[in-house]
Length: 266
Ligand SMILES: [Zn+2]
Image (cartoon, rainbow, N blue to C red; front, side, top):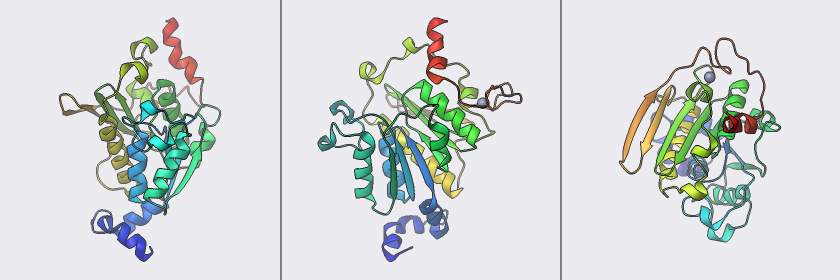
Protein backbone atom coordinates (compact mmCIF):
# COMPACT_ATOMS: atom_id res chain seq x y z
CA UNK A 1 0.00 0.00 0.00
CA UNK A 2 1.17 3.51 -0.84
CA UNK A 3 1.38 6.19 1.90
CA UNK A 4 -1.81 7.68 0.46
CA UNK A 5 -3.63 4.35 0.63
CA UNK A 6 -2.44 3.89 4.21
CA UNK A 7 -4.01 7.20 5.11
CA UNK A 8 -7.19 6.62 3.10
CA UNK A 9 -7.79 3.22 4.69
CA UNK A 10 -6.35 4.07 8.13
CA UNK A 11 -9.66 3.40 9.94
CA UNK A 12 -9.80 -0.06 8.40
CA UNK A 13 -6.14 -0.67 9.18
CA UNK A 14 -6.90 0.22 12.79
CA UNK A 15 -9.49 -2.55 13.02
CA UNK A 16 -7.98 -5.80 14.19
CA UNK A 17 -10.54 -7.78 12.15
CA UNK A 18 -9.54 -6.05 8.92
CA UNK A 19 -6.04 -4.60 9.26
CA UNK A 20 -3.50 -4.57 6.40
CA UNK A 21 -4.28 -8.17 5.37
CA UNK A 22 -8.02 -7.52 5.14
CA UNK A 23 -7.48 -4.27 3.27
CA UNK A 24 -5.21 -6.04 0.77
CA UNK A 25 -8.00 -8.56 0.19
CA UNK A 26 -10.44 -5.73 -0.43
CA UNK A 27 -8.02 -4.05 -2.84
CA UNK A 28 -7.63 -7.31 -4.76
CA UNK A 29 -11.36 -8.08 -4.86
CA UNK A 30 -13.62 -7.93 -7.91
CA UNK A 31 -17.28 -7.28 -7.11
CA UNK A 32 -20.12 -7.07 -9.62
CA UNK A 33 -22.98 -4.71 -8.82
CA UNK A 34 -26.01 -5.59 -10.93
CA UNK A 35 -28.41 -2.66 -10.98
CA UNK A 36 -27.14 0.85 -10.32
CA UNK A 37 -30.32 2.26 -8.84
CA UNK A 38 -31.69 2.52 -5.32
CA UNK A 39 -29.74 -0.40 -3.80
CA UNK A 40 -26.75 -0.13 -6.10
CA UNK A 41 -26.18 3.50 -5.13
CA UNK A 42 -25.23 3.06 -1.46
CA UNK A 43 -23.78 -0.40 -2.03
CA UNK A 44 -21.40 0.68 -4.79
CA UNK A 45 -20.42 3.89 -2.97
CA UNK A 46 -19.43 2.01 0.20
CA UNK A 47 -17.58 -0.61 -1.81
CA UNK A 48 -15.62 2.14 -3.57
CA UNK A 49 -15.01 4.03 -0.34
CA UNK A 50 -13.81 0.82 1.32
CA UNK A 51 -11.29 0.22 -1.46
CA UNK A 52 -12.79 -2.79 -3.25
CA UNK A 53 -10.24 -2.89 -6.06
CA UNK A 54 -12.53 -3.56 -9.02
CA UNK A 55 -16.22 -2.76 -9.11
CA UNK A 56 -18.31 -3.89 -12.06
CA UNK A 57 -21.48 -1.93 -12.74
CA UNK A 58 -24.21 -3.38 -14.93
CA UNK A 59 -27.41 -1.52 -15.79
CA UNK A 60 -29.11 -0.72 -19.08
CA UNK A 61 -31.04 2.30 -17.82
CA UNK A 62 -30.49 6.05 -17.92
CA UNK A 63 -30.78 8.43 -14.96
CA UNK A 64 -34.21 9.99 -14.57
CA UNK A 65 -35.15 12.95 -12.39
CA UNK A 66 -37.50 10.69 -10.39
CA UNK A 67 -34.53 8.46 -9.48
CA UNK A 68 -32.74 11.16 -7.49
CA UNK A 69 -35.10 10.95 -4.48
CA UNK A 70 -33.23 7.76 -3.45
CA UNK A 71 -30.52 6.86 -6.00
CA UNK A 72 -27.78 8.88 -4.31
CA UNK A 73 -24.95 7.82 -6.63
CA UNK A 74 -26.54 9.95 -9.38
CA UNK A 75 -26.67 13.73 -9.69
CA UNK A 76 -29.08 16.29 -11.14
CA UNK A 77 -26.37 17.05 -13.68
CA UNK A 78 -26.31 13.43 -14.85
CA UNK A 79 -30.05 13.12 -15.56
CA UNK A 80 -30.29 11.54 -19.01
CA UNK A 81 -26.87 9.87 -18.80
CA UNK A 82 -26.37 6.12 -18.67
CA UNK A 83 -26.60 5.03 -15.04
CA UNK A 84 -23.36 3.04 -15.25
CA UNK A 85 -21.47 6.06 -16.62
CA UNK A 86 -22.98 8.48 -14.09
CA UNK A 87 -22.25 6.11 -11.21
CA UNK A 88 -18.71 5.38 -12.44
CA UNK A 89 -18.01 9.12 -12.35
CA UNK A 90 -19.18 9.37 -8.72
CA UNK A 91 -17.19 6.29 -7.67
CA UNK A 92 -13.99 7.50 -9.36
CA UNK A 93 -14.37 10.90 -7.70
CA UNK A 94 -14.87 9.18 -4.35
CA UNK A 95 -11.89 6.87 -4.79
CA UNK A 96 -9.64 7.15 -7.86
CA UNK A 97 -7.81 4.05 -6.67
CA UNK A 98 -10.62 1.67 -7.61
CA UNK A 99 -11.18 0.33 -11.11
CA UNK A 100 -14.74 0.67 -12.34
CA UNK A 101 -15.86 -1.57 -15.21
CA UNK A 102 -19.19 -0.76 -16.80
CA UNK A 103 -21.72 -2.70 -18.83
CA UNK A 104 -24.55 -0.55 -20.18
CA UNK A 105 -26.83 -3.47 -20.93
CA UNK A 106 -29.44 -5.56 -19.19
CA UNK A 107 -28.02 -8.71 -17.63
CA UNK A 108 -29.88 -11.64 -19.16
CA UNK A 109 -29.47 -15.34 -19.84
CA UNK A 110 -27.37 -14.48 -22.88
CA UNK A 111 -24.61 -12.56 -21.10
CA UNK A 112 -24.90 -13.43 -17.40
CA UNK A 113 -22.52 -16.39 -17.23
CA UNK A 114 -19.72 -14.65 -19.09
CA UNK A 115 -20.18 -11.45 -17.06
CA UNK A 116 -20.46 -13.04 -13.60
CA UNK A 117 -17.51 -15.35 -14.28
CA UNK A 118 -15.20 -12.30 -14.31
CA UNK A 119 -16.03 -11.37 -10.70
CA UNK A 120 -15.52 -12.92 -7.24
CA UNK A 121 -18.89 -11.95 -5.84
CA UNK A 122 -22.23 -10.61 -7.08
CA UNK A 123 -24.44 -7.99 -5.45
CA UNK A 124 -28.09 -7.99 -6.56
CA UNK A 125 -29.50 -4.49 -6.80
CA UNK A 126 -32.11 -5.29 -9.42
CA UNK A 127 -35.82 -4.64 -9.16
CA UNK A 128 -37.40 -7.55 -11.01
CA UNK A 129 -38.09 -11.14 -10.09
CA UNK A 130 -36.76 -12.39 -13.41
CA UNK A 131 -33.39 -10.75 -12.66
CA UNK A 132 -33.31 -12.16 -9.11
CA UNK A 133 -33.85 -15.75 -10.29
CA UNK A 134 -31.35 -15.21 -13.08
CA UNK A 135 -28.63 -13.90 -10.76
CA UNK A 136 -29.27 -16.63 -8.21
CA UNK A 137 -29.10 -19.40 -10.82
CA UNK A 138 -26.02 -17.96 -12.53
CA UNK A 139 -24.18 -17.33 -9.23
CA UNK A 140 -24.89 -20.86 -8.05
CA UNK A 141 -23.85 -22.46 -11.34
CA UNK A 142 -20.59 -20.46 -11.24
CA UNK A 143 -20.00 -21.06 -7.53
CA UNK A 144 -20.08 -17.34 -6.63
CA UNK A 145 -21.51 -15.79 -3.47
CA UNK A 146 -24.57 -13.60 -4.08
CA UNK A 147 -25.62 -10.75 -1.80
CA UNK A 148 -29.33 -10.31 -2.33
CA UNK A 149 -31.38 -7.25 -1.41
CA UNK A 150 -34.83 -6.00 -2.30
CA UNK A 151 -37.15 -3.19 -1.31
CA UNK A 152 -40.88 -2.54 -1.47
CA UNK A 153 -42.54 0.68 -0.26
CA UNK A 154 -41.30 0.91 3.36
CA UNK A 155 -39.93 -2.61 3.66
CA UNK A 156 -36.75 -4.32 2.61
CA UNK A 157 -34.91 -7.58 2.94
CA UNK A 158 -31.33 -8.82 2.68
CA UNK A 159 -29.71 -12.23 2.63
CA UNK A 160 -26.52 -13.90 1.40
CA UNK A 161 -26.55 -17.00 -0.79
CA UNK A 162 -23.40 -19.09 -0.60
CA UNK A 163 -23.28 -21.91 -3.15
CA UNK A 164 -24.51 -25.11 -1.53
CA UNK A 165 -26.18 -23.32 1.37
CA UNK A 166 -29.45 -22.37 -0.26
CA UNK A 167 -30.49 -20.13 -3.12
CA UNK A 168 -33.24 -17.74 -4.09
CA UNK A 169 -35.31 -20.71 -5.31
CA UNK A 170 -35.03 -22.34 -1.88
CA UNK A 171 -36.46 -19.17 -0.38
CA UNK A 172 -39.01 -18.49 -3.15
CA UNK A 173 -39.74 -21.66 -5.15
CA UNK A 174 -42.28 -19.77 -7.27
CA UNK A 175 -42.30 -16.14 -8.39
CA UNK A 176 -45.26 -14.05 -7.19
CA UNK A 177 -48.03 -13.18 -9.63
CA UNK A 178 -46.68 -10.15 -11.56
CA UNK A 179 -49.85 -8.15 -10.93
CA UNK A 180 -49.35 -8.49 -7.18
CA UNK A 181 -46.44 -6.07 -6.87
CA UNK A 182 -46.32 -3.57 -9.70
CA UNK A 183 -43.24 -1.45 -10.29
CA UNK A 184 -41.77 1.31 -8.16
CA UNK A 185 -43.07 3.96 -10.58
CA UNK A 186 -46.60 3.42 -9.29
CA UNK A 187 -45.92 1.85 -5.90
CA UNK A 188 -43.47 4.35 -4.45
CA UNK A 189 -40.36 3.80 -2.33
CA UNK A 190 -39.38 5.53 0.91
CA UNK A 191 -36.21 7.55 0.21
CA UNK A 192 -33.91 6.31 2.97
CA UNK A 193 -35.01 2.65 2.83
CA UNK A 194 -32.60 1.58 0.04
CA UNK A 195 -29.86 3.38 1.95
CA UNK A 196 -30.38 0.95 4.82
CA UNK A 197 -30.72 -2.19 2.70
CA UNK A 198 -27.98 -1.34 0.18
CA UNK A 199 -25.59 -0.43 2.98
CA UNK A 200 -26.23 -3.80 4.65
CA UNK A 201 -25.46 -5.43 1.29
CA UNK A 202 -22.16 -3.54 1.21
CA UNK A 203 -21.37 -4.59 4.79
CA UNK A 204 -22.03 -8.26 3.97
CA UNK A 205 -19.86 -7.97 0.86
CA UNK A 206 -16.94 -6.52 2.83
CA UNK A 207 -17.32 -9.30 5.43
CA UNK A 208 -17.33 -12.00 2.76
CA UNK A 209 -14.22 -10.58 1.08
CA UNK A 210 -12.31 -10.32 4.35
CA UNK A 211 -13.79 -13.61 5.63
CA UNK A 212 -14.69 -11.96 8.92
CA UNK A 213 -17.83 -12.11 11.04
CA UNK A 214 -21.03 -14.09 10.63
CA UNK A 215 -22.40 -13.75 7.11
CA UNK A 216 -26.16 -13.34 6.64
CA UNK A 217 -26.40 -16.90 5.33
CA UNK A 218 -29.56 -18.99 5.82
CA UNK A 219 -31.11 -15.91 7.37
CA UNK A 220 -33.22 -13.20 5.76
CA UNK A 221 -33.08 -9.88 7.51
CA UNK A 222 -36.46 -8.16 7.17
CA UNK A 223 -36.62 -4.43 7.77
CA UNK A 224 -39.72 -2.30 8.24
CA UNK A 225 -38.80 1.38 8.13
CA UNK A 226 -42.20 2.58 9.36
CA UNK A 227 -42.24 0.39 12.46
CA UNK A 228 -38.41 0.65 12.51
CA UNK A 229 -37.98 -3.04 13.19
CA UNK A 230 -35.52 -5.67 12.01
CA UNK A 231 -36.65 -9.28 12.08
CA UNK A 232 -34.81 -12.40 11.07
CA UNK A 233 -36.30 -15.32 9.20
CA UNK A 234 -34.30 -18.52 8.96
CA UNK A 235 -34.28 -20.79 5.95
CA UNK A 236 -32.31 -23.79 4.80
CA UNK A 237 -31.23 -25.30 1.53
CA UNK A 238 -34.23 -27.18 0.14
CA UNK A 239 -33.15 -30.75 -0.77
CA UNK A 240 -35.79 -30.75 -3.52
CA UNK A 241 -34.70 -27.36 -4.93
CA UNK A 242 -34.49 -27.67 -8.74
CA UNK A 243 -31.23 -25.65 -8.71
CA UNK A 244 -29.25 -26.50 -5.58
CA UNK A 245 -31.17 -29.56 -4.29
CA UNK A 246 -30.07 -33.18 -4.21
CA UNK A 247 -31.44 -33.93 -7.69
CA UNK A 248 -31.14 -30.67 -9.63
CA UNK A 249 -32.99 -30.24 -12.90
CA UNK A 250 -31.67 -26.75 -13.68
CA UNK A 251 -28.15 -27.12 -15.04
CA UNK A 252 -28.04 -24.05 -17.23
CA UNK A 253 -29.82 -20.71 -17.40
CA UNK A 254 -33.46 -20.72 -18.49
CA UNK A 255 -35.88 -18.10 -19.87
CA UNK A 256 -36.48 -15.96 -16.78
CA UNK A 257 -39.01 -13.57 -18.24
CA UNK A 258 -41.12 -16.56 -19.25
CA UNK A 259 -40.57 -18.21 -15.86
CA UNK A 260 -41.63 -15.19 -13.82
CA UNK A 261 -44.39 -14.24 -16.28
CA UNK A 262 -45.79 -17.76 -16.38
CA UNK A 263 -47.77 -17.18 -13.21
CA UNK A 264 -50.00 -14.70 -15.07
CA UNK A 265 -51.43 -17.51 -17.14
CA UNK A 266 -51.74 -19.86 -14.17
ZN1 LIG B 1 -31.90 -23.76 -3.94
